[in-house]
Length: 229
View 1 (cartoon, rainbow, N blue to C red):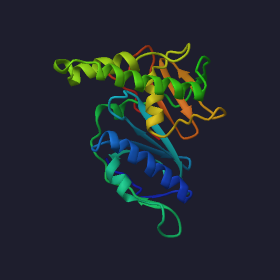
View 2: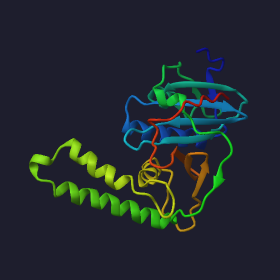
View 3: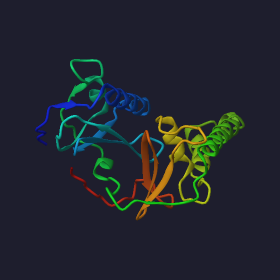
View 4: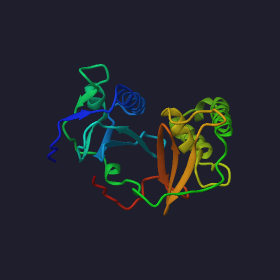
């Protein structure tokens, strides 16, 4: 795939630094992670999929230019290229394109999102996540030695993280992903919203979003929706 732009010019140092932090968290879960980048209208959208959470993570950054492109690159190479302190303004050389995993051809819709009620408060979300982690550790510790396997732990994790939050269809693993990726805060007045578009659910905060199909759909059985900036 030919990409006409070879350099990313961010609006300010903070934009590049925040994106670097997101990429670092993503690479913590997958050292070989790829990210799909879509740029247009002075904004960059970065899509990633941290393993085990079964969600798409979405982080945006403001650009100083009006480049338009759509490409999948190595998250590690992009992180290495980011230069929040360099030159007259933050910039990064755009890595070469890679053949992305199947999920890079499956993105949530651009528009049509509607707010939906029933999501617990940020403080209650934080408490639910803490309880879930404590339950997982307790159930894991209670396993007899002969059953202390990855398969058994996966069953426990699936039981806990598939539970829905409040009166919504949003699984606990989506909020867990948002917390682990630095999107979610426990402050009482922290702005967090649940949006729906068709079968998609999206947990949105000022720091980023996680999106997935509702009714426990995850990402595995999705029809392909290709987006181009």
